[in-house]
Image (tube, rainbow, N blue to C red; front, top):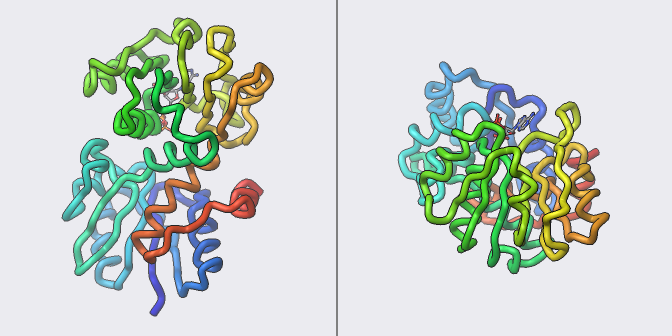
Length: 271
Ligand code: ATR
């Protein structure tokens, strides 16, 4: 019997998820389908019930539905509850089980590329949007002792930091360079540096050469931030791995197989 799954969002047409999940289904010889569903918010609940009625195994969730789906789930895990947002749902016995795999994807991408040592020192995070929320949760749950958080709109950073005020220190956008002193891991979660967005204006002169630099932007793959970091000897991790690794737990929940993130898959997603 076909394992039926879906990806829901609004808009969702440009999503890479169909490519990723069907690549794995093919790799593991599964009878599997993944439909993209562009549903406006007002139709969400009704349409989710129709997935239930049609025997779907689960679905992934993207903007703007992550918070609403959190509310619609019958059960959620600790990660989803901490973020109050769900990006992956598994359907079992007519019930919706929600989780959030964005933070896992971020951390697995770093660990896979440079090991877990970079979660033992000070981390600096640029940005305070949805991606930053997942990154902060992943860093805190992996025991990072201190996080420096910097965002153009200070109040958004202060709001995120208020959940963990002992560990997260907020910096003004104009102090984004000075905050890099002594940092072990720098993560850009802003859209700056992405194709079509303004550049990220950041010299790394205060950053220790031993620090790891991660950009979650992956268009282009080799962002200016990563080039600058590599040029001065810092280890770097690109953003495409976060997209691929966040899909792994969903695929595992739906099919029972923890799929491999291969170089070939990375190339296909970027093509
Ligand atoms: P995502 O869900 O991908 O994190 P988002 O919630 O729109 O997307 O967040 C985008 C991030 O990029 C925010 O931190 C945003 O800063 P603001 O909170 O001040 O909007 C940041 N960003 C976008 N354009 C920026 C710019 N020109 N300068 C500085 N930061 C910018």
